[in-house]
Amino acid sequence: MGIVGEQLDIDFVISFGDNFYDDGLKGDTDTSFEASFSHIYTHPSLQKQWYSVLGNHDYRGNVSAQLSQVLTQKDWRWFCRRSFVLCSGMVEFFFVDTNPFVKKYFTDPEDHTYDWSNVLPRKKYISNLLHDLDLEIKKSRATWKFVVGHHGIKTAGQHGVTQELVDQLLPILEENKVDLYINGHDHCLQHIGSEGEIQFLTSGGGSKAWRGDIQPWDPKELKLYYDGQGFMSLRITHSEVKFVFYDISGNVLHQSTVSKKSKTFGLF
Image (cartoon, rainbow, N blue to C red; front, side, top):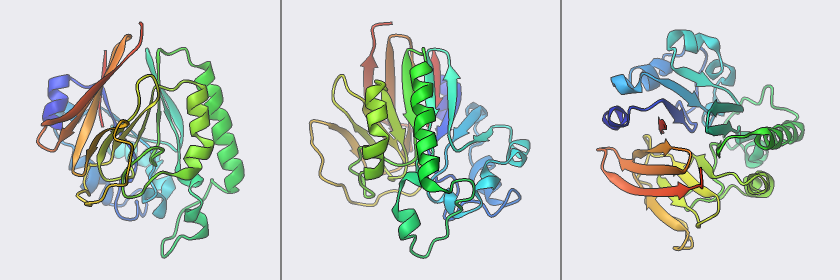
């Protein structure tokens, strides 16, 4: 990842959640922060700003710790919020906290304990989030609009489609003609999409992978399913977005381009 980042001269990095396994951080002094972040991404090309969302495993720890400025003081690259907008000229990234949408985390948490502080009541939280997202996308004058979340809307991975997002989030993305939805959660690399519609990209192969199962999906839509570790890059210009998926050795697994009649790099 560092070598590819150097070749592309990347501008920033995005992490799609489940930043710290298995149960997030215990607090802002938890050494897992250094062990899983600062001491891992050491290549010179990766010394750029990182923008992160929370995953379900992060919610099993102390959420406020990941949002704390204390971590930023330890490592200036770290930036994590529940939901936020990243404005980058021709493109805007809308980061969405998808965890509260998943009902089973509340009704059937199994043996897990989730940190829902500052989220409850759930319905109000989701309603406010969707309202704000819709407003921000409508306000945007960017050429490209990408939405980032942890859970998948269209995925052939083990976890499957997150129905709550299909019912509540997808209509907003479609109405506002969002170009890409990018997520993690499933431990694979994936591209699902049809020409002229939203492209659904999964970059969840940062560590745990090789699960060996894939859900049935329309082969006309499923452009890539790689059940292993890897990462992806985006190259964005006014007229097109090129996304490339790589395995852990930097070999290209799949690449595709979305064009729009009108230079930024990111590694994920």
